[in-house]
Image 1 (cartoon, rainbow, N blue to C red):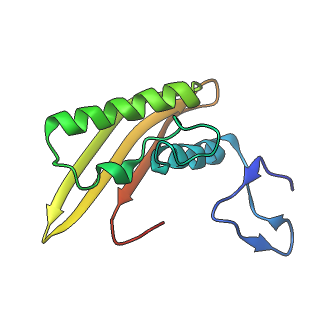
Image 2 (cartoon, rainbow, N blue to C red; image 1 turned 60 degrees about the vertical axis):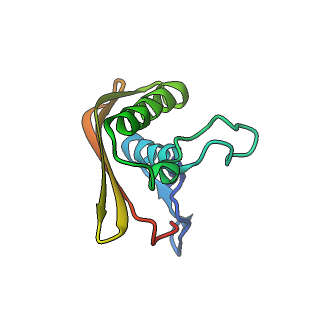
Length: 129
């Protein structure tokens, strides 16, 4: 069965070769993750692409920083994925025992396809994925 796009990280199986995303919901969630994790300037030929969540990881979790980050997420999604309507964005930054953690949760819908999808990302500086 053919898919929409390669599923990342790349995996090969005996039936379909490279595994692929099978539906719009799965593909949209994968693309949202890439949009959030890619740092501006990191994508070749499009230096404005990406939110760069890791760039915010060691910032103070003040209301100003959180508002700036939520604004960046909303702006990037509306620019690069205009078919996604974000209903709610929640960003939490914590420092527990000298370990910085970031939790990003948002609810979105895909125009004409689905309602109330949810994306939850945890950013931990110990992991480089």
